[in-house]
Each structure stands twice: as C-alpha cells, then as structure tokens.
Image 1 (cartoon, one colour):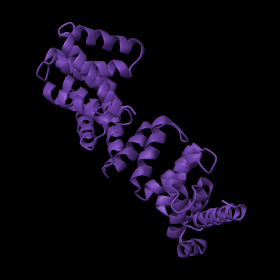
Image 2 (spheres, one colour):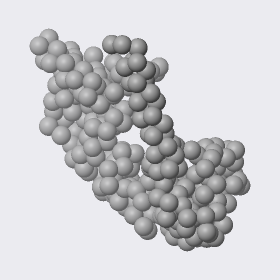
Image 3 (cartoon, one colour):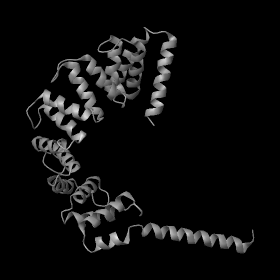
Image 4 (spheres, rainbow, N blue to C red):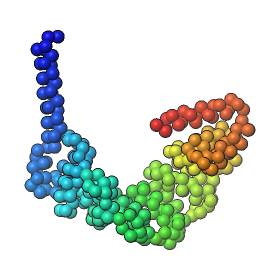
Amino acid sequence: MNLFRKYLLLFAFLIAATLGTSAQIKGIDPNLLGKATAGDAQSQYLVGQGYEEAKGVAQDYEQAAGWYQKAAEQGQAEAQYRLGRLFRAGKGVPQDDAQAAAWYEKAAEQGVAAAQLNLGLLYDHGQGVVQNSAKAAGWYRKAALQGLAEAEFNLGTLFENGQGVPQDATQAADLYRRAAVQGNASAQFNLALLYDNGQGVKQDLAQAAAWYQKAAEQGVARAQFNLGSMFAGGQGVAQSYSEAYFWLELAANSWNGARQQQAIQARDAVAGRMSAAEVLAAQQRAAKWEAEHRK
C-alpha cells in the first residue's frame, strides 16, 4: 500500500469517526429539543430520559438531572421521581437523601407508584427524613394498591412485626401472597415460613414446601436449606435424600460461618443415607445449577 493510499484511508476513518460523534451528540430529535428549550415539561422530561438512558446520546447524568429539574419544577410527576432517584444515587447531582425524599413526595402525591415505594423506604429506614414506620406503611400501602410487589412485601413485613401498623399475621400473609405470585423471592420465602409455622394461615407443610421451592429456585439460601430439610424428613413433600442433598449443598455454598456449618452438617447427614453414585449425581446437579444461576 502506497503512502498516499494509507493517508487517504486514515482520513476516511477520521471523517467517519467525526460523523459518528456528531450523530451521537445530535441524537435527540431537534423538534423535541426545541419544545424542551421552549419550556414544554413533557419534552424536558423526555430529553432528560434520553440523557439518563443514553438514547441517541452519550449517557450524561448531569444533563439528565438538569432537564428533569426543569420538568419537575413544572409538576411533571415522572421527572420528579427520576430527579429524586438521581439525588438518592448521587448521579449528576450531589448525593442527598433529603432532596430525594422531597422530590419523591411530590411524585408520590401525584400517584407515581415507584415514588410511593421509595418514599416509604426512606421513612422505613430514616434516610433523608425522620424514621417513621407509620408513614412508611402509608406510602407502601398506596404503592401496594397499585400492585407493586416490593411495596406489598414491605407492607407485609410491617404487619408481621407490628411496626407502624397493628401486628396482623393474616394481613401479612395476604400481602406476601400478592407479592409472591408476582415472583418476589423474599415474599415467597416469608409466605412459606407462615405456612410452615401456621401463622396467619392454617399450617400447611405442602404449601410451605411449594413456596420454599419457588424462593429456592431464585437463589434464596434460607429457602434452599428449609426445602432440603423438608425433603430429608419427608415433610410436605415425598422424602428424597437426593433432593435434600441437592438443596442443602446449594445452601452450604451460599453461606459462610455458622450457617454454612449447619448446612454442611445437614447435607452430610443426608449423604450417609445415600450411595456414592447418588451423592455424585446430586453434587453434579448442584454444580450445574450454580453454573447456570450464579454468573
């Protein structure tokens, strides 16, 4: 390749790179940007979203926060929520839980379920606001009524423990069930515990095992341990040492310290009732599960 051709190719590459950068910078629809600049709140929100989610432009949290604030100050609810989220995370703005709470509340009062949930979390943990379980429960309830699984679970824990609301295991079970059917692993485990112990529901070991299994399949170590123990004793499920070993092995590999030793002892007790081939098959199955689920 002669020198002229090499320089021509280099020049073409630089032009392409420059055009690519220009396209990236100008990726926001000019009409949308024009409306946003003119003060349209919905357009300002969408421009902010573009910068936050890198839609056609390089991700820029500072730009996102700036556009969200313009829209939020005009009462755009989703922008208020997203601005609160940026303050909570300290992305594009200084980390500030009090500011996060203030913007969450504005969005929450307009019915944004995610803002209601997040404001509830701040009251629950006393971050950016004075800790108040009753206010946490109130905001969780509003989000739960909109079907938000995490809010249902969180409100359920408050009812189970009697924090901010009267202690009521039946209410807790109902809320856990609502979240559990949506796939919330923590709710699945807590519902299983209630069935296991007969709290808030009639004791039902088969139901307990079924919900433990759903949580265990999502990697909840306590659910794996409890399910393995149920298979070992034939409680709520048909006794199966292979199943017991499999779940106890997963629990042991998830934990450390005293809990890990507990799981290892239970697993090894089960292994004493199995053939070497059965143990090997259960170990291989556990290793395959971990390779697929713990990436």
